[in-house]
Image (cartoon, rainbow, N blue to C red; front, side, top):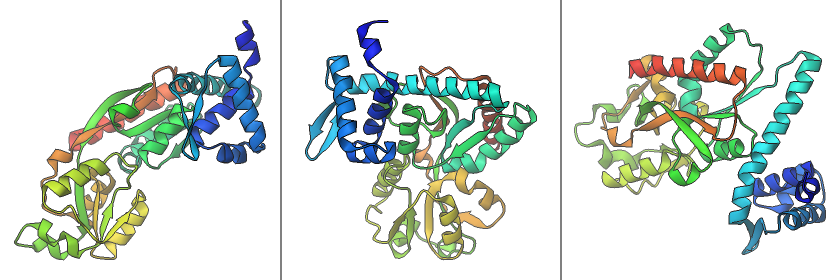
Length: 310
């Protein structure tokens, strides 16, 4: 082992990854339960060992350097591998498998994951599964640092895909969902001229479909919608739209079941240009465990069933 390796300890990696994730020494210190000076000292030790700066000042905050970006990919993978190692040892001792941590966008949580889990449970791997949902940017960040093993959702923009690989499952588009019996369902003229009269539920700025939605609205002369609520919560969206005349701009998969059940309806708008690929995103350097490989296979099967219905 070289001097370089010997000087870099687990705490250096953990502190570095947390500062990179939070983009703040103060926030990282709080989450790691150590003082700010201790965080700063640990980062300085790491930089001395590496011989390069991993962070630089950016106004009042900090940002990661190019060297830091490169090191982050490996540090995240190293922490993840170590965590897997610790999990598998404790698994041997307690007979418990390490959890598989999946980040799923709402469209996938609703449409794919229930069926995928049903198929997975039949395999009796007895693995614990943790499914988290949220904005794609947040999920990808957690995947990057090893807090998630897999993200299932829309393909991110190319600049967010460094260090990741994507497997396409199917494509879907954005839809305009409303309650059954909504006044715009029977409108004679173009729906776009009346959109500004209603509350619009929009995807949040951190969501992948937001740029698609914005350019689609602008192209159809509805760029300014004064009454907007931004949300990634499908449970809020579903409840709010069913109880009001609001219009929910959302991925088709989130509301497919509600439309089939007649609880919601889709406005007659051709949104085919908002179509985008949905699939599996993993870190290119990660080796999936056997249970994760099996789960990925059941997700593929579930997606295949959905694709046939599209």
